[in-house]
Image 1 (tube, helix red, strand yellow):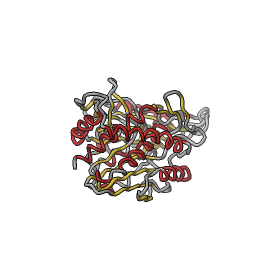
Image 2 (cartoon, helix red, strand yellow; image 1 turned 120 degrees about the vertical axis):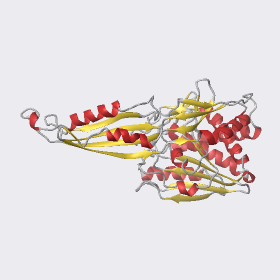
Image 3 (tube, helix red, strand yellow; image 1 turned 90 degrees about the horizontal axis):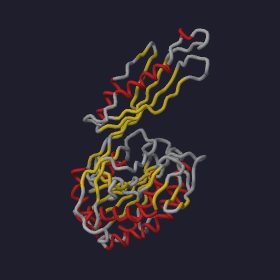
Image 4 (cartoon, one colour; image 1 turned 180 degrees about the horizontal axis):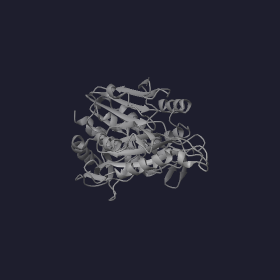
Length: 398
């Protein structure tokens, strides 16, 4: 999903002291992760893997599998979306007590024709899927490799990489496999606050995709337009009503944005059919009901059928994450901010089974869902430090 790199809401700060006081193992391991991440990222971005493309997904899975540390157990599970390549899960067993799952996705939204391989541009690495989210996958691979070398810390580590996050309309099929895990760390894009502090995401809105189909009556637009019933005009009115139903400052913080409208097939015919798509975000999925209720079954003899084709839950780990985030900041020797983001993520699905789910652990960058996505090179090490500090803190809690 879109990697939004502006902090929407600061939830907590910490009293960490010096930015030079990073835990020695975290600092050294993060340096190794940053070095390998550039290589892994170049290999991953070289593959065009838009959602639904099985060949591209298989190539990306092969690259990720080859980058796994020795001794991991690799499994392929059927994807949540039919006809997609199977998802990849890596597991490592240790002698400790804690269990953590790392989470990411290999699919992108950029088409094969527009795909751009990775290039360095000053302090940026630019390429399709770099920030959403192959950069995060590269960091997750490095974190898994470093933690795998310390089996005394954990009972089990898992890395789940899915192939359909960008277009899935169903719930994530693998959530039940991780029930009982202590924490989930998701590697969607990271960010900093306006004050320059590192941030992680502990709260996300619910997300919905509303589709409205219209069936009217065709007519010659020059000879007898009055005998037609325009699907286009009906959908335009629906779009107006959806927009008017938004209440971003209300208790549900509901946003409702018409995004795509298709109607008509010829310039001289009253459009008989059309389809409108709208993006909905709110504190809870239930808030979307008011938008659906505002759409009648008919407007000016045009039949309307509305359907919520995608509904992703929200995520709120503020309470569960407050202590771990504060203690991780002590390992970092700098503030770590718990923040909110509006965009959807598989972390929201996983949070239904794992209360302690933290997102936004990937590198910082921008231009998500564009061929020219980019990330800042320096953020690879900085975000690796954040992920490792959190992982150690979560495992210490056992």
